[in-house]
Length: 107
Figure 1 (cartoon, rainbow, N blue to C red):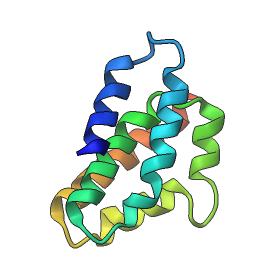
Figure 2 (cartoon, one colour; figure 1 turned 135 degrees about the vertical axis):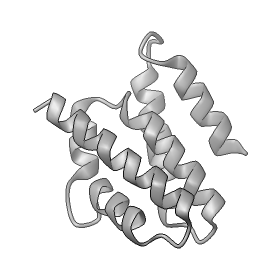
Figure 3 (tube, rainbow, N blue to C red; figure 1 turned 90 degrees about the vertical axis):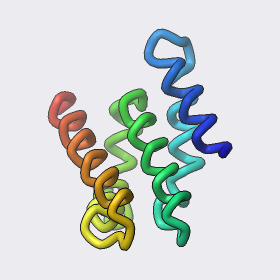
Figure 4 (cartoon, rainbow, N blue to C red; figure 1 turned 45 degrees about the vertical axis):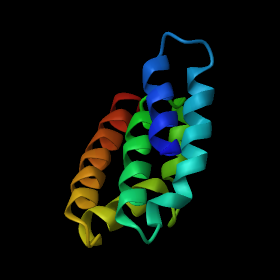
């Protein structure tokens, strides 16, 4: 649906497109609440979008996103460990690893 379409736009924009970090931030803001949606297909789409967006977010935005008890790292950890859908658990685990790598690269 719409989330997959927007994810593709952000992915295709990549780092070469002016404003791609802004697109990524907007995509992340849109899908963040969907990471805990009841339907697994919606959670999976939000996880794919998050995986795409985190690579384009400015480090300051990324650090802010992971901070706190309801931060991205916490939510991804919960999904990776407890989601009833195996695909969502797998995607969340992968995104957690990517997130850790990005934060380590920029620390």
